[in-house]
Picture (tube, helix red, strand yellow):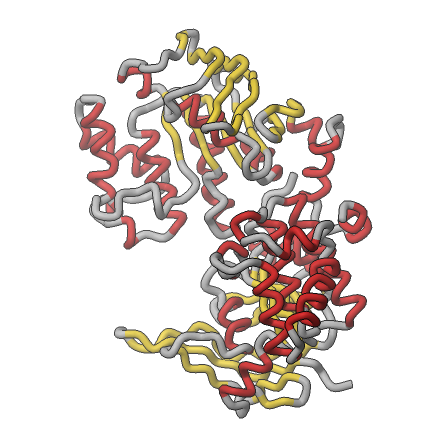
Length: 259
Length: 251
């Protein structure tokens, strides 16, 4: 079986006044339609890795890889136009805080419709229908009301469901979620995770779950990559994370307070 | 040491606290947990004197707290805030940050006090003339703790002191707080959304939701899952990680 995403020897550097800062130093991994966790502390390179896949890094970033292949498609050779179709079309992204990812002056419905019209070429009416279906898919009880609401009228958990709904409109094969639940209260966090879990299982989508929360990743994902200073120091099954062997992973696990 | 009875606070038409009572013994440590908007930080701000209008009764070390308390009153009580990036003046050196509370309270011998406070939080004299932007998040939070301790308070209020930090840095800061609490016999109130963090530092906790305390219990009871309120149970389950069966049921 061909992997959904293949990353080989990925380097990410940032050109600054004081020379190049290497954020990611030659990482390799491959994933299928599974929940892959990337954990690490701030500055470990986990977020830039997620962004590099979608080519969302700023101008001063230099991304080089031996292979960066998504479903047989060489992402390094894809042109800007085609990349726009992939972004939000075949690969979706959910970020930490819905407050900053949603357009504050546009109704939720308009934002979902826009995604449906751009990626699926639907008419306004069909796009509206599709949008409402997506809101139902993320278990929003009153989709009509949320459709007509502005982002500031929604709670954090609701906002994050809307973000996921927008990302699902086009039926992506891969979802990159960067700390998608860190801004949410714990009980809401569990609901959002359950929704993503269901999507992976039912739709056969791949999920890259970037997080600093080790216990959460261990209990939620199938497999985990542990990053430290731009390198992957350990790869293991999520439920085996407590038996990790690398000294850094061990130290990280020891630092987690337990009840 | 802290006796709060029936505290109420309203912000406009929103009732942020709807009758919160608790007490903390001298040298005790009390945790307030709950989700955003539950009122836990508001409780802390009332105790710290940072909210001008509140109802109920509050006494610290046997003295009733009034709307405007004298300066010596505030010296007994200091607070550490969540965001170490926002709580330190960006254009003041560490030295000036620590000297200011001493000047306000007209304490003698600032030189010695500043050196001791820095030493207490594990920052050497080399840090004294640095600016906040030259420090890491953990180092900044140490400075914020030093600023609170430099007045030698009896009560230390901690508002999510580690939630902006990486997990390994969080562990160091928690260790530091536990040590300082014991060494100085501080009475502490800690606000956090993380049950495990609260359990490390506190012996009693109150679970808050929508402006009221839904359950008060000991940390040992919490560990053994001897809790009665369904919301406390929900928090406890969430702190144990993701459980697909449980999470789907709540959808």
